Length: 534
Image (cartoon, rainbow, N blue to C red; front, side, top):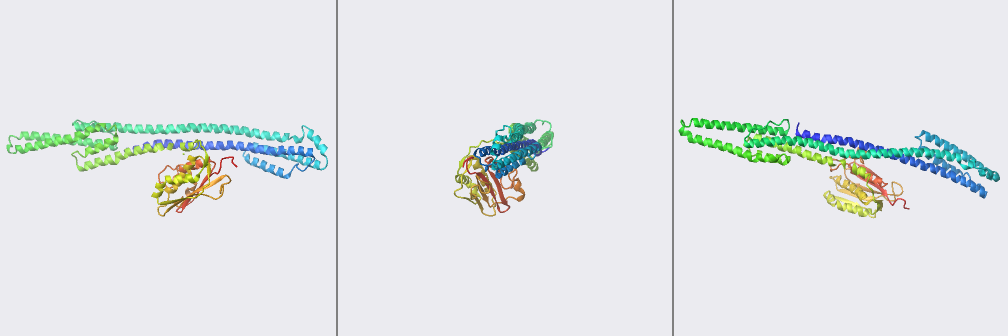
C-alpha cells in the first residue's frame, strides 16, 4: 500500500467518525429546538388563556357597577363579545393539534355562551326596570354571575396545559443534557481517533524507516544488510535499492579480489606489464575506497532519521547523489523521495491541520449559542468605517470602491458580535467581486424605522456588484459548511451560518437578494433600541 493511500486512510477514519458525531450533534440540536418550541408554545397557550379570562371578569364587574348606578349601557357590549370570540379562536388554533384541549375549548365556548345569555338578560331586565330582581340574583352566591362554571372549565384547561408544559420543559432539559454529553463525546472522540490513527501510521513508518536507516549504516560499514523491508510502498522500494547497491558493491569487491589474484599469478610471467597491472590494481583499490568513503560518510548520518523523517529523507537524497550509481538509478531514487515520501509526509501534516479546524459554528455555533452578549447602543457609522479601514489592503488589492452612507441609525447589540456580522459580510463582498469589472460595495440602511421587517428594527444592507449567487444555492446560503464559490476564496463555509445565528440571537433577521453575474445584497435587521424602550 502506497504512503499516499495510508495517508488517505488516516484522514478518512477520523473524518468519518467526526461526520457521524457531527450528524448526531445536528440531530440533537434540531430536537432541542423542537422541544424548546413546544415549551414556548405551552407558555403562549397559558398566556392566551389568561387573556380569555380577563374580559369575562371585566364584564362581571361591569354588570355589578351598572346595577349600582342603574345604567344598562355598559352591559353585554357586542364589541366585547366579538373581541372575546377572536381571543378564543386564537386559543383554539394554538391547541388544534391536541384533541383533549380542543374539547376543553368547546366546553369553554359553551360556558361563555351561557354567561353571555345571562348578561343579555341582565341588560334587558335593567332596561325594563327590573333592577330589583337583578339585585336579588346578584346576592345569590351560586348565581350565574359568579362565573363558577366558566372559571372551572378555564382552570381545567390551564392546568392541563401547565402539566403539558412541565412535561415539555423536562423533555427540553433531557435533550440539552444529551446535547452537552454528545458535544463532549464528539470533541474527545475526534481527538482520540486522530491521535490513534496518526500514532498507528507514524509508528509503522518509524519502525520501517529505522530498518532502512540501519541497512544504510550497514552498507556504509561494508556489513551484510538485514532482511528486506516488506511491503509495496516507497520505503520498501528504497530499501530494495539499498540491497541492490550492496549486491553491486559486493560484486565489485569480488571482482577486484579476482583481479589481484590474477595479477599476482601472472606477475612473474608478465614482468613487462607488471607496472601497468599494479597501477590498475591501485586504481581498483582507490575506486573501492572512494565508493566506500562516499557511502560511509552520508549513510552514517541516517542514524537520526527516525527522529525527523522529513529531514532524514532530504539528507538521504543528498547523499544518494554522491553514490557511484547509474544516472537512471539516481533519478529513480530522487523521484521516490521527492514525489512520494515528501508528498506523503506533507499530506499527513495537512491532514492533522485539517482535523483541528471542524471542532471549532460546532462550538462556535453551539457557542455561538452559548456566548453571553453585552448589548449597548452602537454607532454603526463608526463601526462600518473601522471595518473598511481594517480591510483597506484587500480592498485596494481588488481595486474596489466602498461607499458608506452617512448618518446610519444606531442599533442595539453586542459590539464585538455585530462588528463580526458586518465584517463578515463586507469581507465576503470583497472576496467575491467580479475581476472582469470595477468592484463597488455599498453599506447603508433602508429608509424608515424597521423598514421591511416591522416596528423596532433598523434594516441595514451590504450591496456589491460581484459574482452573485446562483438561484439554486440561495436556499443553502446560510447552512453550515456550504461553500458557493470554493475556488475563489479560502474558508470552511461557516461564516454566513454564524452570522445568521448572531443576528437571530439579537432578535433580528438576515436575508439576501442576488443575481448571478450582477451582484448580491445582504439585508440585516437589528433592534433599533433596547427591549422595552418607548
